Length: 438
Image (cartoon, rainbow, N blue to C red; front, side, top):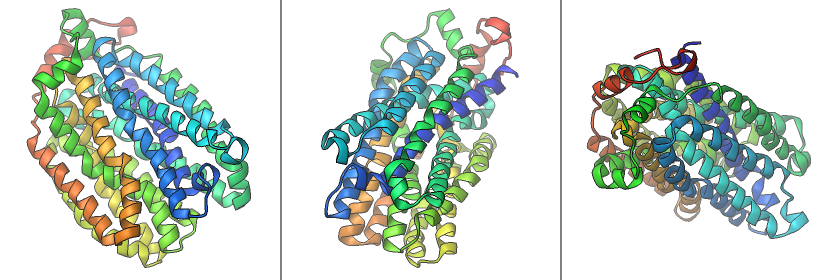
């Protein structure tokens, strides 16, 4: 397989596996964790506590972005990707083996939070290098498509995670699911991580990074350099992610709680709707990424974000109607709009930073946005809907989308010539790994 194709597969498969681990926790937070780790008389309190531990995985992402993003610019993209995959895989398997509150009391939720924190660190460090792995091996004039490999990871991982839970929910009784069935979804991670490691260990680092190493142009203090020299790019990257991130948490995590408790849908029905939308995203994300190589990336993303801010006011009422067909329609349209924004997003974020600071800047922008976007969204949506109703919850999502429009307007359009010059100067790796030029 050509180097760029292998890099695309490595980025897609590894990121999909890591987001499976991340997503399976989100699904469990909505369906089983309130009863297993946060028991109490008030179901709302249990749900809020479960979503709070879900948020820890986002809050810890900047730690991973800070540590591993910096290492991606100093030691290389490949080393980071192997380490992050191991970190999140070990944490996920450990969750699958963790005794519940009924067995070890308050120690159970404490350890659960710590393991969730480790998951977040792994995912936070993963994204920046995964995007660059495929984007820097690929043609810089088609970065929207090549960088979308890592963007396919969240819906692919979400599809797999919800698929596993859908099968478990359909084949097991509620008692069986709560007793041992949920553990199966977490323990499967061991097999998936082994496959991801096998793919990544066979790759060389990217031509761009090897060229930076050869010329001695890597940064010794990439975090400081990003903050000092490229603050506008960092702000643009953070804001551009907020709206899509909040919307994705709504459509794949909070919807499981809202639809089952407000409209009385069965768990399997809601999971099915999410599965349909996630399956469509597998093709739509690279398609929109490729489209952004021909049309302006920022314009495509702005249209998608504005559409999301409008659609959310339709989504809540159609779910509350109790009609399964409308539930599927609401979730699917929302995830199509998300794919339209998310496909070009990786290229847009990485293009805000110079090649020598690209891993650090991209990782910081992506993970900081996750704290204020996806981390808090399920908790805020739960609280707003409980206290004020769905309309105020929808306004919250719409405001996040407005901030994303601001971020996209602040961003710059990338000149691919800086990557072409670096890639042309890259030393050839073993077995011709660096011989293919964009």
